[in-house]
Amino acid sequence: MAKKDNNQQDFFINNKSNYQSEKVITSIDIGSDKVVCFIGKIDNILDRKKIRLIGSGYSQSKGIKNGGITNINDLEESIRKAVDLAENQANCEVENVSVNVSGNYIRTERIFGELFIGNQIINQNHIAEVIEIAKQKFNNENKKILHVIPSNYVVDNIKNIVNPSGMSASKLGVKLLFIYANPNHISNLENIINSCFLNVTNFTAKPYTSALSALTDEEKNQGSVCIDIGAGTTSISVFVDGSIVYAKSLNLGGWYITNDISKELSTPFDQAEALKTLYGSALRGANDGEEIFQIPIIGGNDENRLSFSRSKLISIIKPRLWEILMHSKKCIEQSGYKDISNKNTVITGGTTDLPGSIEFAERVLETRVRIGFPSGINNLVEELSGPAFTSCAGMLLHSILIQENEIKNRSENNNFAVKIIEKIMGSGF
Image 1 (cartoon, helix red, strand yellow):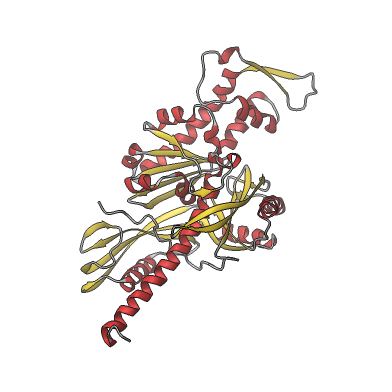
Image 2 (cartoon, one colour):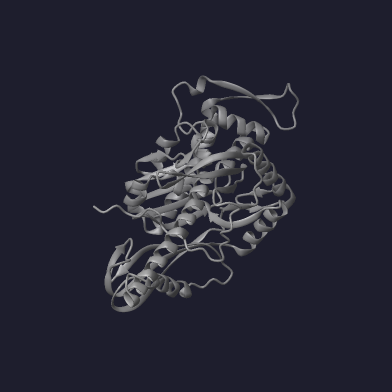
């Protein structure tokens, strides 16, 4: 079997590719729990580009909930703190960054375009033209396009062609996946980033970037679902034949679990978060009823404390986690890719740190599940190697894909031009 090209192209609309250096890339993942900044250095190892993390920083998120901005000044402060920490560690100042988008702002649409080429050999010009034909069919009114990705090509009615270049055909078709967001939300985010004296090179969709890091190349090729359960949002993506074919983001996440604990036990939110992190679980154990904890009550003094068992805590966590997974399952079924989720499902994001989350997810989703961790980045220390950092790592991988595809396109276009000149003038010009 021929090896598939996993470097799927992403045709950006109005993308600014002016990195401060081709060797340094920066990503900012703005979540409801924390803002994460990664600074990566691109190393050339055996003719391949590899990313080495040289700086990282994260701060508590303020001014954002469920991916939506609630306070501009607070969010700006959170971003500044995360970037400052990363810059200090990397010993450099960054100017250009990529920024993640999540929440109900994310939408997808698939468009088909077709070009009649009259029994010619398909070249890069034909591919560019058929992509442009499909783009023209997309109604971009009140939509900010984040990614335009060819999920597959169709050559003379033969579907699922990964790379049609060099094939002889009478017609060429392409299915483009458009991932887009609310333009007002994007504009507000860009204004905040600019206020931090930073320039946004591109916005990325969290369902896409999480999967880039969490899924292996084999999983992308064979077909997989990636579910990133963050604090305020849950992002879902589906990959088939190495390309993303579906993306969705829900305003549900681990924040709601913490909020349920806070309400049920009448304890401050930060105490509820600590309880979830230290003693929470998705599954109940035999002795959980015997483990008793005491916590402060909202508005009370040190003497007013509530006693409760670990089994009580778990009974609060499970219904909300079930709801998050069931909504994810429903989205996958509505997407038409339920058979893919039955093959392979990967869950990632900070909420999956809960003990028992794999077993619980397998019961709800009725399929085999594994935890996805950030991969493809060198120099990730243990503190940054958990599922909460998968998306930010994926953003760095996405940035390097952009550079590789730009170089590849320039090379292929130059080679095509050389062949035309050689045909006209001979090879000795």
